[in-house]
Amino acid sequence: MALVRRIRLLLLRIRYPKAAFGARCDIRRRFSLELGCSAVVQFGERCVIDRDMTIECMGTLVVGDRTIFGHHCTIAARHSITIGSDCLIAEMVSVRDHDHAFSRIDVATREQGFSVSSIQIGRNVWIGGKVSVLKGVTIGDGAIVGANAVVTRNIPANAVAVGVPAKVVRMRT
Image 1 (cartoon, rainbow, N blue to C red):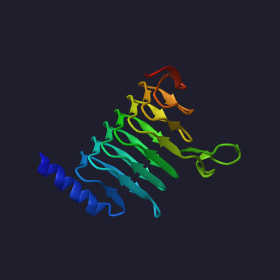
Image 2: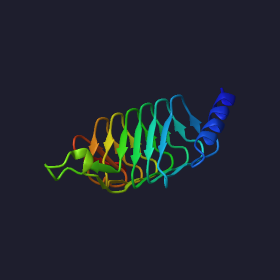
Image 3: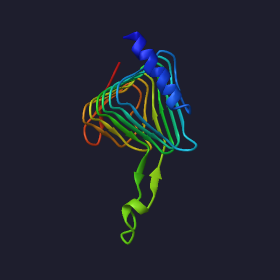
């Protein structure tokens, strides 16, 4: 099994020369990566990317060491997304640093461009299943975001946040 993982990592490095995958990354089946002209993608050492993950990067995506992504996650970076080391990101999580602009009613939404703002996710963060992290958000070190939450505002370090929109319900001590 380790040999298969090494071969898969080597093939990904060849297929995506603009992306950097750290040593001993484990990238599972059906990984999809779309890179823009000036995109920067960096994964630290020993990251795990479970099956069916999609990354769309026109800007910068930096992921720290030993971060684990569950299956069917989507990361979309038009500007900048940073994810710290030792994070647990459960299945079907969506992290997007942009929204469609939609202020004009005389122009189709798809033609109005985007509103963009960076996302920062700290170290040792646990993001539960089916969470959506929206543009402009910072999630502090050691925070936990409960399943199905929609993160629209900053979450402080060591906080536990749940709900739609996500709200801090307690602090970890």
